[in-house]
Picture (cartoon, rainbow, N blue to C red):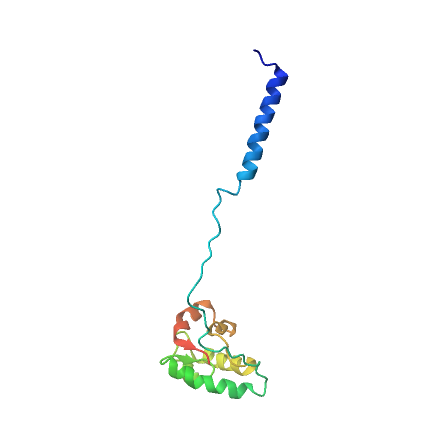
Length: 140
């Protein structure tokens, strides 16, 4: 018995259709179910978060005075840029009389330093000088 070309194409399409529908119905059987993980311990914040309002200009001097004492006590041997005198500033490497006066003038004109890297805004102090003294200064 010989199969004609039309019969062969019909049988082939039927086989492809059966394979497709079988795969369609079995598609989810091989995938694993999601895993549910339960923990015995709950995460609890141990210390409360306190949000402070932004300090106004009238409150600023009293707020900045308190941390300077604690910062100086916490980091012995470091020079506080916001409270140091010209003589104390001149003990730093690369800082002479003129640069010490420039630091104090900048501090008086622009307010206290917020970060030690702000020293680069002072005339005569660049990245090189800052790199030499960054470990020896602090701000309050």
